[in-house]
Image 1 (tube, rainbow, N blue to C red):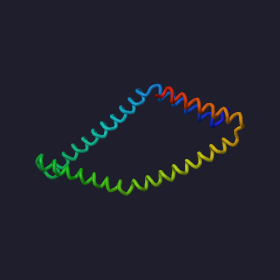
Image 2 (image 1 turned 135 degrees about the vertical axis):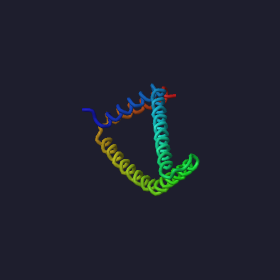
Image 3 (image 1 turned 120 degrees about the vertical axis):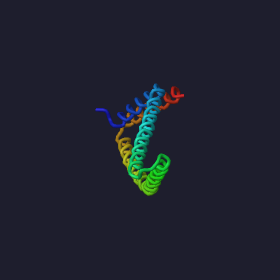
Image 4 (image 1 turned 30 degrees about the vertical axis):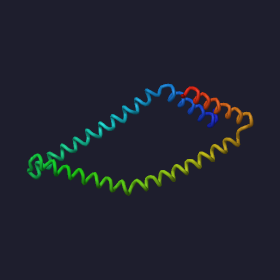
Length: 143
């Protein structure tokens, strides 16, 4: 059975190797995913706008310019409502995330401290050597 500290070191080492060995693939995938999200959001916005255009045009029997002005103001109103909601929701969300992160930080700090105290002197030296080697390899091969 591998101790949790060694398991964490192995996982972090594997992640460092993956990130440093194929950054173009990882960043390319991230950029492509971001592009997909932006394009999907734009397509959704266009579908909503066209639907509103048809709805306003048929409900109020307006010409093209009047329909576009009405739809523009509807979209501005919805955007302002969204901004107002964000104005009230974001501080609460940040406060919740801050408290959660601080609690997680305390739990991890206590767990690492207890794990460190339970290690023998030889295992402490091994752990320090592994960490120093990993940091050195990351510095040498990362740049």
